[in-house]
Every structure is written in structure tokens, then in C-alpha cells.
Length: 456
Image 1: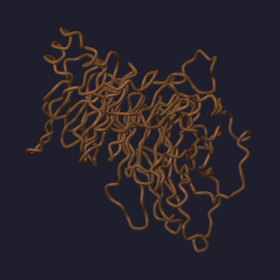
Image 2: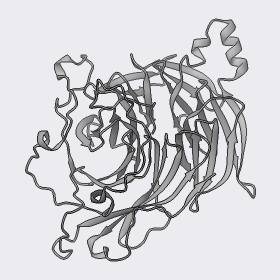
Image 3: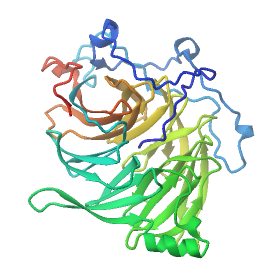
């Protein structure tokens, strides 16, 4: 999911120059562009001296300084991923049958006159992208051609998108949520059906002095849907999360979730809500149907050191929660099989600037950053160790939103995913990531090049 724009790099506290400055492509760096196939290195149990290898170590706070209701975790992040070296020599496939090679390529790149790309969602073979220009474009897969667009009279940007059961929910910069219904009668069409909050309900609330119960007082930053409970959540920079009943689009609860702006929210299939904030914490909420007007209660607070948490991602089974921070770290927590409690698992480090968006698909985690790169991580099933298998380079501005979904056609002895990235440079890119066994490394070659580019 995407996070509000973070303009300050983690390791230049006093610099006045923004870190998101659009930069030209540097094709002279041959060391990085000639080889884009990431061979998984064989990790050892020897600890790495990260103080010598990593240029930046984020500030840390001791667990004793945390509030009493804060879940304790190690004061030093455990960097659990395997460092990949593109120059790693091949290992004989017979001796190492589980050795894999990951390749990737940009298959499409589109630049429209919409300004910054701020949100993306994928559903039923369609990709929805929201932009600075008050426009939602609809793209058809696999050819990635535009088949529709959604526009309103409101002159505000589209900051978040959620799609569920042929309903599209879009959060705008004017603190409102607009709803469309998708139809499949011959051609794909979208009909706008509602605006949240409803005008009549808001007017009645304003007259009664309860308007703060209906409308966010600050820009909406994220949306999440709990279909089983008929609930739509909206998070805002006003530090609250509002709970909307989808059947009648009424606000049934306002959660005073954090002391600082909320950047992102996700909800699991079990109904558990996770909120990320600039207060450097992730909070976990459960819904109790017997609690009257405030059914959501805080169960645990997960600290992320002293760095604001900008984005969240949750695996499909709810077993791993990821939090991307402004210092470039991606912290993750593992859910215990017996206790069901979240335990701190470690941190992934690779980005040099703030992590602005995350997406999870199967064993893959995709992170977009203000350093203009997107990293693809592979999570091992047995020990939950992470390997950075690809670094997607090509954008000239911070990557603001990302989506990951299965490949439409999978070949034998390989898996992978398709990644869609949207950037503040106004470009939407589609990437194909393949992970094959080392014995198939000679079948085809991967080029870090674009097969298709459109400017309109």
C-alpha cells in the first residue's frame, strides 16, 4: 500500500534539498546495468559486520523508553535477508538442486499528462491507477491497454484506491470517498453510485454539531475493506480511522488511533485492523461486537524504533506483517501459530531513502521507495529469511504506489510475479519477474529494457 509523500531522506537530516528530485537516467553505470539477473547467494550462519557494509544506521530507542502497553522487541533490528551479489559465480545445479536465479524486465511503460501517480489497485484482470489530475485510469491485462477512465468534478488528487466485488472506492484529497460500480455488459463500464459521506447525512450532522463524527478533518491517506463484516475503513492525517458500513455508507465509529498522522492501514481476513503512523508505531485493533459504540479496541502496539511507519503490507494468510519506514528499513512481525501473537522477526535493509509503498503476493514482497527504485524480496517458507532477488530501476522520481499479482502465464519449473509501479515522475511501469531453477538459466535471456513505451 502507498503512504503519504515523505520528502526527507533518512540519512541527511540537515539537508535542505528534497530527496525526490527527478533525476535523469544514468546509463554510464555499467556495473549495475549490464547484469540484471540476481543469483541467490548461499548464506552462512556467520554474522555480518553491517557497521562496515551499510552506510547508514537508523537511530534507535531503548525498549525501556517505550510506553507500558508497547510490545517489546529487540533494540537492534535483525537484518535477516541474504545479500545478493549479481557477480556471484554460478553453482553447479546438480550439487545445489534448490539454487534459483531471478530475472526481470520492464514490459510496459506509460506516461500520461496526469501528473504524479499516487495510487494503484488490481482486480479481475484490470489495473486502476489514480493520479494528481483527479483521474482514475483503467487498464486491461495482459496487454495493459487503457479501457476506461473515471473522473469527477472535484479538483483533487486520488490518494488511495480499493476494489472489491465490482465496487471501486477512491479516496480524494478533499477528504471524501467516491464509489463506482463496475459492469461487464459487453464492454467494461463504471457508474458512479455514491459519495462518502453522503451530503444529506453530513448536513444533518453539521446542524447538530456532530460533523466531526462524519467527515475527516484532514486528508485521507489510506483505505481498507473488510468484506466479511461489511466494513470500509478510512485513515487520515487527522489521526483517526473512520469505520463505514458498506450497506448504507454510514459512519458507525471513529477510532482515535494515534497521536500523530496515520499513513496506512491494512485489514486481515480475520478482521484484525493494523494502523501505521508517524509516531513510529504500528497498532493492532480487534472488533468486539459487544462493545457498544466503540467496538474496536487496541490489543497491542508494535514499535518501529523512532522512524515513522509510512506503509504496511500483510501476507494473504495474515502470518507476516511488514512495515516500511522513512529511514529505509522494512520491519516485519511474525504471527505465532499457537499464541496468535505477533513476534518481531527482523528488518530488511536495501533502500537508501524512505519506503513509500509495499505489496505482498505469495512469497514475494515488493517495496517502492523515495530512492526511485523498487525491490523484490523472496521469503523462504521454512525459516522466513528474505532474499532481495531484484532491484527494479527506471523511474526518475520516488515510487509512490505498487501492486503485485501472479503472472498470467507460468512456465514449467518457474514462478514469479507481475509488478505495477507508479511514480511521482508520472510514469506507470509494468515489470515481469521470473524465478527459475539454475538448470533453466540458459532458456532465454532477460534484459532490463522496456518492450513498450507510450507517451500520450
